[in-house]
Image (cartoon, rainbow, N blue to C red; front, side, top):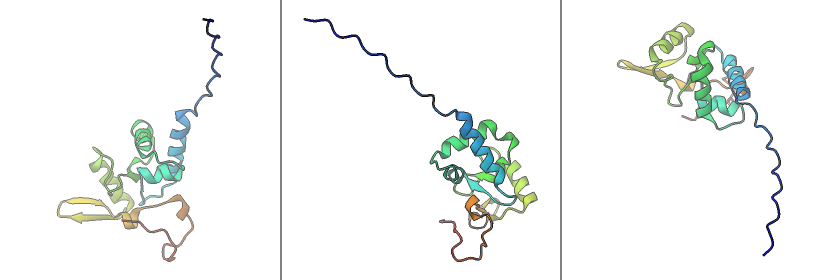
Length: 133
């Protein structure tokens, strides 16, 4: 039996794009959200051509203190977990549309949801993107 041929060294792996690039991109999108409007974690990811809503959440949890964090919300119209009272203060200051039922509230996503591709578009336009909920 002949000895096995020596293995060729593996080609070096190309480094992945630094995670900071995604964080920087998330921050850029979040900074564009106008006062009184919101985007979901999924909306922010989609604006970046991604489906990584959880990664957006992770960026916001670790790096969002210097951003308007209250403008990035859960898809059901609820603010970030454990920040409800602070977020409500910001929503009131900015005039963000809310819906109330007894003592509970949530964002009125039909009116508050914003997308970077709606800049300069008239919301009365019948082709204006509508909230699917």
